[in-house]
Image (cartoon, rainbow, N blue to C red):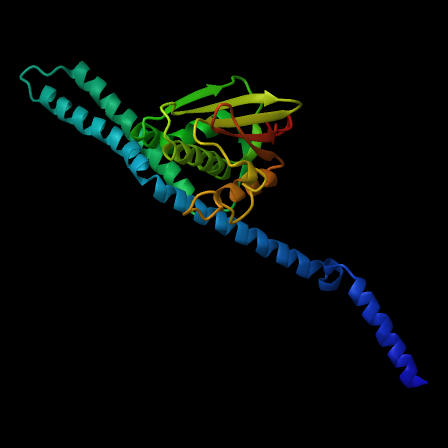
Length: 280
């Protein structure tokens, strides 16, 4: 009888284990540890993608740093010549010194943005103006659009409610989407080369960011899969850029959509919840 009872007990235990959910089997502490590890992996992967994107934009970044430095050198030479005169024009020198300081600060801001994108750091949530995110992202890709004769048009609504999020992660989303648009246009034989970036207040307490290009668009069969990991319509693409964008936006309580435009091109729309009054 004892043996029979043991078999019945083991059978009962097997049934309970087989029907239990994974979180019931591993326990709360272990589940939290696994969730923390998965979040860490996601953060590390997003950081690796940011560094990869910076590598693609090295020419544009170099241009943004070189421009204010060139102004500084030119103004310093001019100020030196003014001071070398028998009767130096100190008012003119003062103007030049002010411009030197202004451009030094500009170069420092560009370098700081590059550092923020390149350095691995934990997300920091704060109230953000979506228009600032757009303007900062444009700095990274402006030289690329100029090199490929692409018109970049900003249609930024005024007095939008702020959103709550991590500035670097949201910049990463905007930069990724802009890179996608640039690549789509350069791979298409079209004279209509334009990217339009639009911000607005959408339905309810939602802020919208839309990036539209005149590239070749997204194949109809791929529209439902563009945000999947490791799926790409490009021969040499890894298929992680848009997947990371979706992960970041979802983590911010928002959503991202893709669609084709008429007569050609693609559109990506990001919707993010506005900050609560106390957060803003």
